[in-house]
Length: 264
Image (cartoon, rainbow, N blue to C red; front, side):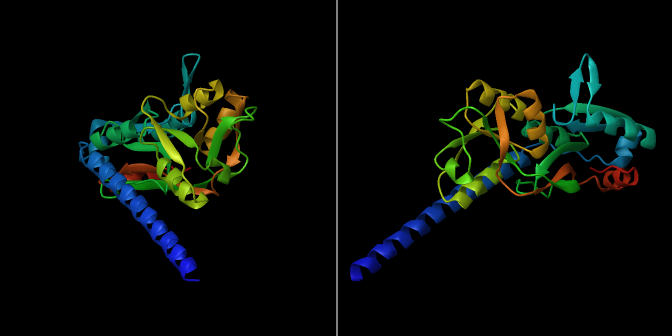
């Protein structure tokens, strides 16, 4: 009985030690993210400055928000730009950028005024610099894998234990994947790709260069059309809250966008 109690204590101590290490790593990552965000230039730019310049700038991800087909610009972000030009009288520019760190750089420096690129509420957003806009509930986050790869195909979340998921640099889904590893109770590593965005990583999964990445419900529908060999049907979450992003110091622009009927 005494030996059993000793073994139980050892397991408890080991668990607490692992929990403490995980917390330290999480805090270290949060501090690093905060320092990187704080190093970005931050402009004072609200609706009066935008009206004076005469130009409003929107940013969205290539593929998920805007596309170039046959030399023509198309996609939801361009429809939004047309709507805003009619209602505001401003010239509306569109920027396509899939890298999240670059999207934040555009927003903080004033080369973009609204990031119409959904982020999840599990993302680490510096609320002293940015504010959420046009919040809504979207579909789940999905695993991206090869349909016919029996050696690596995952049918349940717990089977991801010990595997690695590749994400774009500064992906707003990285914190969600870290939480998923905690939920399944086993190691789940994240490989960061500094060059490619979600669609390019999906192409790498399809070609066999990597085994797994993740995508939003909107991206899952798009990838299913573009890459028939991919399986994007395993949900890694229930529905998630998502939002667009604005500068914290642009409350007048936020109110104007609401008045112009901007939403999702």
